[in-house]
Amino acid sequence: MAMNQTGEPGAGFAQRVDAATLARAQRGDMQAFANLYTLFGRPCFNLALRILGNRAQAEDLVQEVFLKMIGTIRGYRGDAPFGSWLKRLTVNAIIDQLRGQRHDADIDSEVVELPAVDSGNTAAAVDAWSLLQRLPPRARAVLLLHEFEGYTHAELATVFGQSESYSKSILARALKRLSDLVVTNPETDPWPSRN
Amino acid sequence: MAKPELTYSELAQHLRLDQLPSAEPPPELWPRIAAARQQLVRRRRLRYGIGAAGAAFALAVLLAGPASQSRPQPASAVDWQARAQALELQLHALAPATGAADVSAMQAEIASLDRTLQTAYDEGSDEDRLLPLWKKRSELLDALLDARRRHLQISRI
Image (cartoon, rainbow over all chains, first blue to last red; front, side):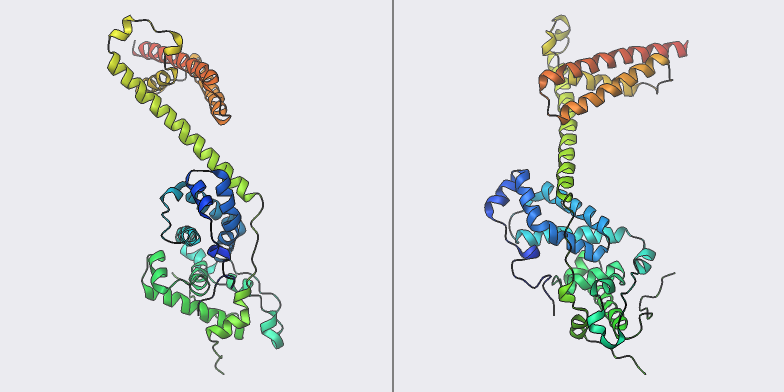
């Protein structure tokens, strides 16, 4: 059921990088890095923004990821497409950031006001973005990585340093919460506060 | 009445999850990243330069031994950067400064010189500009070391 981030082949992190640009980047050529940013800055920023839900944090994360990419690209051997490698750097940086956030904030943060919903035509009125922002960041991360970026539960377990059942449980609760929000009752909270 | 639970595909359809808005990163983000990279490189270069100069100086002292003291060297042959590094180490080995006026003035002068040096490295200056700055720094450190030792002796008396 996983969806591609954009639905287009060769878009986002799936874009191809020509060998000459890669070789120049591996020699430390800043113009080559600028070209890579032109290709991947946007998907990197959007993934960070969707999960972190905050522009400033997303910008900082893109900076962190590209600095890391510049510093480690010599070690990139081309075993996976460059975009996949960069996406892994991005996801790891996002997960690191989420790990650093307090649990309380994780559960309760960023409740964004829902746009006005016409009860007669929910599907047309509900803003997916706003609804996703009502999920805790970890839940958003699991949902977006699993459903949009094609991560398996085994891969999510690895990046989160948890078991597969952790990621399955988070995903199930995220979907239930979204479902609750969409169907009728936006007050339902499947994420009880931890004490 | 129990709430109907949506399947994922129904949910995705309702929310149009495949059409999430895509935002453009701000135009100043790449220049910011490039500047951060430049700064990182400069800092590493400076650190590497100081470290390498220190190692070279230590090696030179070991190889030359006492013979070097009897043979006067031309000013250009002195590695002022390495000498400054060695003096810095000696300074750190002394007890903390007591805040005497001459010591404070020299420390301020060294701090100012360090800023000039940093600017020189930032601008990619060549040896002709860097060498006199390192020489000056070395001389200031020499004077500071003398002053610190003098103060230490006075405080012991």
